[in-house]
Image 1: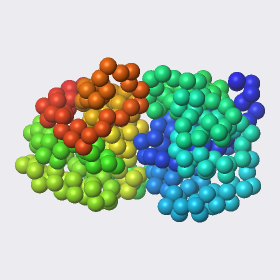
Image 2: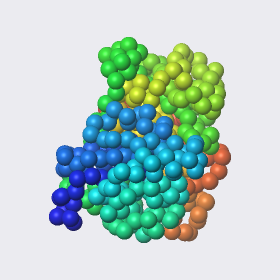
Image 3: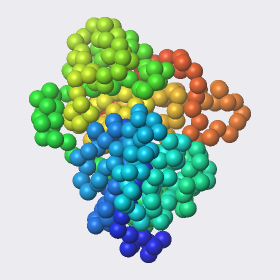
Image 4: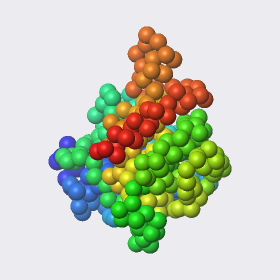
Length: 345
């Protein structure tokens, strides 16, 4: 395999979304760049995700804006019309990604193995990564680097941000300040913990000498959840929701001492910055989607829930648990215990 790829000069990566997944993909891209420093890399990426990664060195980005509907495919075809790549890494299992891949000309088209190549992906690829039985998403992505001969698959991240965003975070969080950042909102409301329980943990952190910030984006869900948390809290909490760009948030997460979040993008952003993350999980398997470098800090009820929902069955590794009230099974005491464990270390 190594001999086949030693002479490649151009590579296209197709991974449109989401924030957490593109954070995993960065580690793979930078592993490729370490082995093939002269390789020209083009990344087809979503509009929002681009805002986080647009300063990544050595990568040319082509934005795929799914909000444009069918016009997004025509634009992608036009943007890449003059290019034919040696290799395409087709790293997204979604119908829109399968269709988008048809706009990309490449001699070698690598997708997931048969078990994971759903949504028609197997129809538009001619090579597959090695199958993995129980991979974390990041490990699944690293399989693509391995498929083109990359030897060092140790995940590392370097996501540059503008100096002004670094200064923003430095002004917000002093050098020796102990700060807990809570990023409370996932993309779906059912994956969010209860606001009164976030508030209870925040109050405890303040009692331990920590300053608490709530961070998040501008969606109505995030705004309302942050407001509810501050309403329940008895100690001061600073609400930074809507007040940071993605790159500013990345810098804030870097300066934090610890982050608490459900299954959401900022949890994985914090991992890229080396900040400990307490992940809160009920619906998805944290072994697959948990914060990669903070698995020991995850507070999860997933294992017990999934066994109850599918008794006496072989449960697929990526199987999701269903139910709108599952996050209520996570107790405040368990999250506080995880917080104590992190700050002791």
